[in-house]
Image 1: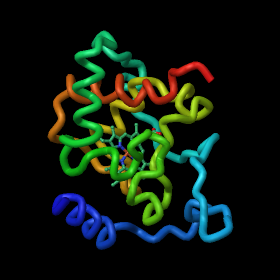
Image 2 (image 1 turned 120 degrees about the horizontal axis):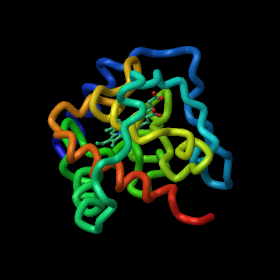
Image 3 (image 1 turned 90 degrees about the vertical axis):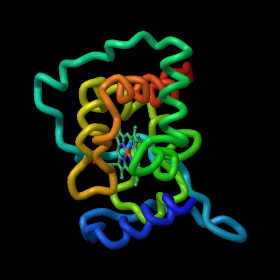
Image 4 (image 1 turned 135 degrees about the vertical axis):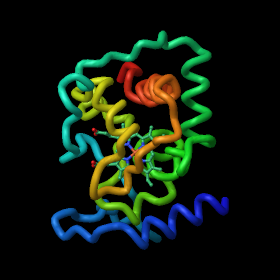
Length: 160
Ligand code: HEC
């Protein structure tokens, strides 16, 4: 919990305020606002270099690899677990999402995720996305990054 609060404070202190991005829109409901996952989700994330973009996940999508990725996503990844931004169900509505522009990627959105090669996901997880809240996961080794990619792919690979 302390880590999540610390991450939140760091985000507030370092986030550049971008006027070109609208905050995640809410839908007015009786008694409050409802937030729907963004899909298709606009993205302006820079592309990985060609040699990385071409990489495909070298690990099999075995239950062990997916489970290792799941543990990193929800609990163990440093500087903070993916879930606080990308959400428990991977839809981009984690507890911090309203503070973040651009919004965290919605991994459940087939239209956006299908166009993203493994190498692109690998590059962004390793190096972060500049000028956004997406941090660089320098503490994860390559195998752990591929495991977490198997896990985030499962959110969108299901048949509609
Ligand atoms: C502090 C919030 C935060 C955390 C924690 C976080 N992300 Fe993100 N993530 C973002 C945001 C915001 C974006 C959108 C960046 C952009 O639009 O360029 C993003 C984008 C992404 C993308 C999309 C890359 C692309 O090219 O479209 C991937 C993949 C990703 N994150 C994976 C992860 C994984 C895996 C973790 C955990 C190991 C994680 N993120 C943790 C905020 C976060």
